[in-house]
Image (cartoon, rainbow over all chains, first blue to last red; front, side, top):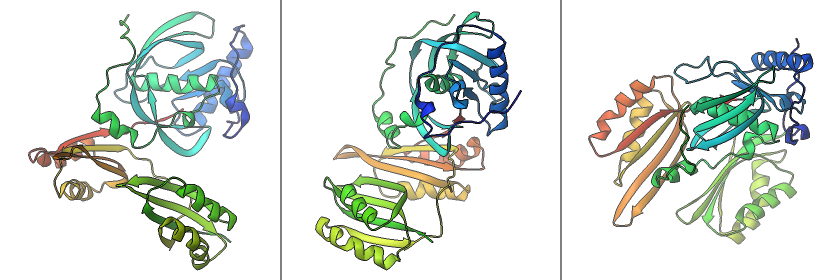
Length: 176
Length: 173
């Protein structure tokens, strides 16, 4: 186990698209262990993505279980994650281990349905909402070379949202 | 060694103000930091951190021609602050109500009494011109619980002001 160096913007590797994981071997397990140790070593991050340590593979870790009153699925290692459905939107403030000393408002889906593999390559389906759904979307963006700074909205955007109540853009997904 | 200054420019809005002002500052050897610029009531207002080895008087002199051309009023304050002094808001207060004088003072006096530190405040007057609606969005930092802020602001609801206090959840990922 080791604490890995977290890449910081403007490192060009953060803008790369990561490749899917195909073999679920010990190397992947070792990487996930190091990623988790790295996540826990920094400021209170609820997630981390492999490309943040320069490994361009589709692996993320998300754990919002330590936050009070937050619906969650515990500690999640999500490999080759894919969002199947999403609905609703909300503005929330985000920061990133790869963008120190900056936070900004970002619009994310409030509910997502997610498919991902675990460390053994077994597929799982998740229904997520709120903060956990936001964390997954933030980490998954890293896999496509996107950072929250690519999605930051104007401070004033929130005011206009308030004036016009827009219906959800995406169809509601039935809970499992 | 460079010192930071807070530069304020205000004038009638038109395209090109930012480009022309910042070009002059760049060519004069200034470095720009945090900024907030917005159109307010047909004016354009710039608040900009500028660092330079030059004196405040020299910066003002350098800006004078472009300010005169564009009809901008300039103000420059030497600043003791610098970069990387961000505070992260943890509470958002959204306010709206039929427009009348006094809403901002009434809301912010209550917040100040609670020790609430305003970090950002945007407000707008919306609605129809004969029935204007005042809308204000405040983000700030407070040590108080949400419940205590909500309770302190509750009397304003009786006076026709809608107030919504919500946490700003910061996600670090």
